[in-house]
Image (cartoon, rainbow, N blue to C red):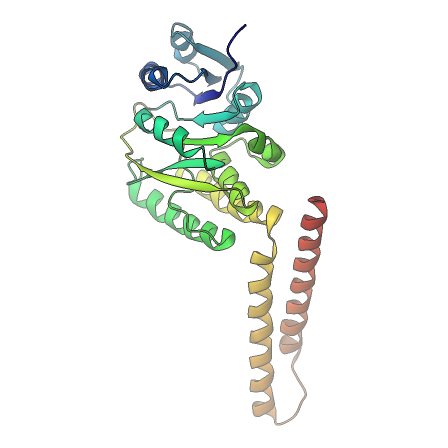
Amino acid sequence: MDTEIQVSVIIPAYNEEAAIVQVVRGVIDVMQPLGIPYEILVVDDGSTDGTGVQCQACPQVRVLRHHANRGTGAARTTGVLAAQGEILVMIDADGTYPVEAIPQMLQEMERCDMVIGARKQERGTLRLLRSAAKEFIKALASYLTRTPIPDLNSGLRAMRRSKVLEFLPILPETHSWVSTITMAFLSSHYSVCWIPIEYYQRIGRSTFHPITDTYNYLTLVVRAIMYFNPLRVFLPLTLFLFTLGVFKMIFDIFRFGNFHFPASTVMLVLTSVQVGAIGLLADLIVRRSKL
């Protein structure tokens, strides 16, 4: 009888023929000494080069192919659905992440639901722009989840498949997949831990779009928290509008010497009440959906 697979290593790939074999061989080199039954799934996301062909020549590799490019998030979801192991390890196919970190991540999985490789530095294209955008988004995500987040969208992580399946309906098909699953685990109070890792210059051409993907990251951070704790968005906005309205009322009293308030003051107070009511309704919907 075949040994039951415990670990599934998922590698989403799109036109990565320059690096994919190196990454696959690196995974095999670090997994074999562990003595853990594992599989390697390469999800060829509609590559137009030799990515899929090269992977098929590697031992212990199962290649799944999208007929058209659907996005790295879609490739990750395909890998999750096809995986046989309960522990999922994801690593990008561009050679930027150290496969040597995988054994430590698997060891940490004994006490965590997700382990993320936190990159020590940014080495992508347009480094200054990407670093500034990621720091802002990371700070926003940390506030919304009430958790310090060293790295929100690292492509090297290990996680429990049974818990990932809970969130598949809300996971996007873009680069924001990893950010969303991180937010989902944190907001659901699953244990998430980080280990520091190196981050190398990628092999080949990046598919990251600085404007489109940054916008997607930002909107999905807010959208993800709306699924789990909407009051983290609505409550501060409500308090800000209400406080502004109260100060405007006090100013109007001293300015006009009576209690006749302009329409702008009334609108501020009423808007704060409406935003608060929407936030409470959203929170009620979220809590009811979890019953």
